[in-house]
Structure formats: C-alpha cells, structure tokens
Image (cartoon, rainbow, N blue to C red; front, side):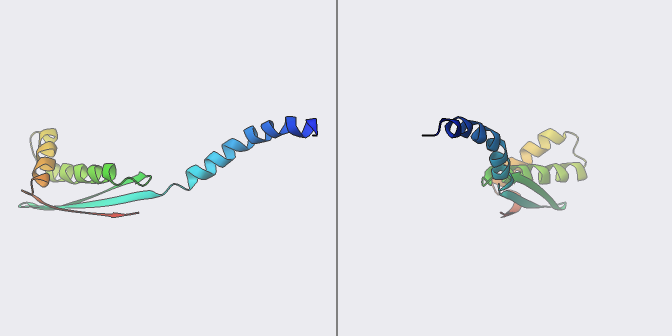
Length: 103
C-alpha cells in the first residue's frame, strides 16, 4: 500500500467536508404557509416561511401572524392576549381560518 496516498486521504476528506455540507444545506427544501382568518371585522392574511420538511411550526407561525394582524387592525388594547385568544378560538372553530402550504 502506498503510504503517502493513505496519509493524504484524511486531509482531503477534511478539506472537502465543509464543501459537501454547504451543498447539502443548499438542497434543503423550504415550506411556505399562508393563513387566512375570517372574523366579523374582516379577513386577515399572513404568510410564514421555514426550511426543512416540517410544516407544523410554519403553520403555527402563519396563524400567529394572521391573528396578530387581526388584533392590530381591530385596535385591541392588549395585542398579546388577543393573539393568544385568537389562536385558541381558531382551534375551537369559533373563528374561521384556512391554512395552505406549498413545499
């Protein structure tokens, strides 16, 4: 076995590893979800984006952002409490909401 070729192999692997990892990171798929909330005061829409294949966190972010828009536009005195209530009401189907995701 050629000793010099064997000694260079680990160095080549270590030098190529960052390139391979950056290429793999560039291949990650992204998820984009849009939520539209229909309440008595109007329709409010928000879009959220994320990397990877998991839609759950992106869907939650889109819902939270749409609720926040609703709370701001209706001039709620406590926006954080309004956003929390909105997300709970959507889950209980007291407020109409529709979410669609593209991946």
